[in-house]
Length: 152
Image 1: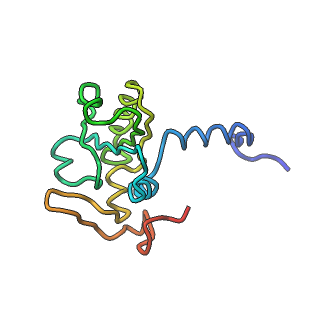
Image 2: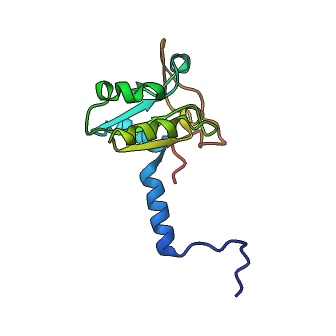
């Protein structure tokens, strides 16, 4: 049998190392929701967006720390030894990546939440606003309407 792929797949050992590494750097909205719901000890979710975005809505329990303020304020806002999960607007924005880099430079274990605030909302998860908790219906292109997870 001839391999017809333009670029062949990695061998299983290399693939295992690659995918394990990705999962140690990244998480998704369903996993963050599960961790927040379970009140996972030591988890701090950081919204790295600006004040106007924070005011529009945020993950319940998130800490507001814009990327430009992380170096100066992280020690005051995020307890030492915490595992940080950063998020920003969504997949078209690398703000969460920049925020995660800042936390890593400060010595915090950190992951980036894939999909950001956009996918949190699109999956129908609860959002905190200045007027209280709200939730939109799940977008069936991102999650089944009947559950909070794609069951992957």
